[in-house]
Image 1 (cartoon, one colour):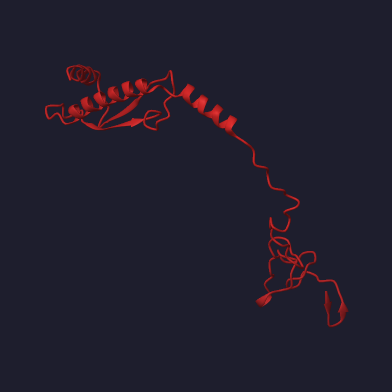
Image 2 (cartoon, one colour; image 1 turned 180 degrees about the horizontal axis):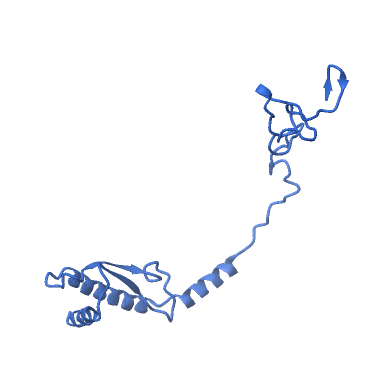
Length: 164
């Protein structure tokens, strides 16, 4: 560091960079003799230009248009293979509607046990998201009770839903 008396080594005084100096030994002292922390990140004399595709279009040529009708046909064929038929879908829909009707009837039944109240029920899974696969025609319904059901209540629920 160059002071009034020429070049000298900056010791541990007020912000220099010598042995035993302050925590930040890289910058000159700031106001009130406190050291100034170093600048975060790299320091450039000139900031680099941002990446611009129009400036380097020759380096990154455009992709060529390709005929993809074969790919579209293969995708459609595979889609038809994995999706259930409309008859299977309609059978599952009718069964779900019957079960939901029975659950709605049980939920609105006033003579139901006061300790076992059916809070709500919802369709979940692949049937609700319309992603059901062929050979796995399953619809899931979640039933939420206010408290844990007992074995007697589950049997009562089965018998009352079978009479519907």
